[in-house]
Amino acid sequence: MNSKIIVKESKVHGKGVFALEDIKKGTKLLEYIGEKITKEEGLRRANKALENSKIDPTKGAVYLFDLNKKYDLDGDVPNNPAKYINNSCSPNCEFDVKNGRVWIFTKKNIKSGEEITINYCYSYKESLEHPCKCGSKDCIGYIVDPSEKKKLLKKIADLKASQGIF
Ligand SMILES: [Zn+2]
Image (tube, rainbow, N blue to C red; front, side):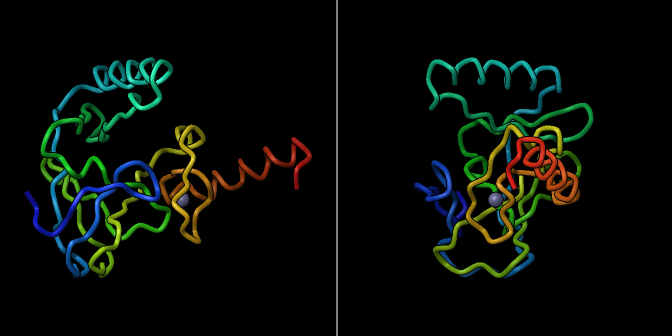
């Protein structure tokens, strides 16, 4: 177990991961481990979780990491605290995929007690189904890949205009 972090209740969403000590920018913090599955299997599991969540909202969690065009990583395994890392529109960590393994690096200096956050980088298409309540000043209300943020903001503006909300 990683001694630099702890999993506990988060104000952002459910459980979160927190720093137990000051951590310097550029630190290889932990690996996102999971079961390597095909995209097809990933979709099956995501749909099943969606069905389950309609019966019990606490059972809809999916921890799929988009590994590459062919495979996903299902992080819903024991000993994977990384699955509890919450999204932020202004995150202090980032993913790095190397040789099929996913590592989480700090991209800022982190203070002891601070929540570890990452941008889930959902595509523009997925983002509207994933509201964000991270509370950072850069929050646009949805979880989206920074490269598609502009496109999403325009879409939101168009939606509001069409509904007569300004
Ligand atoms: Zn946000």
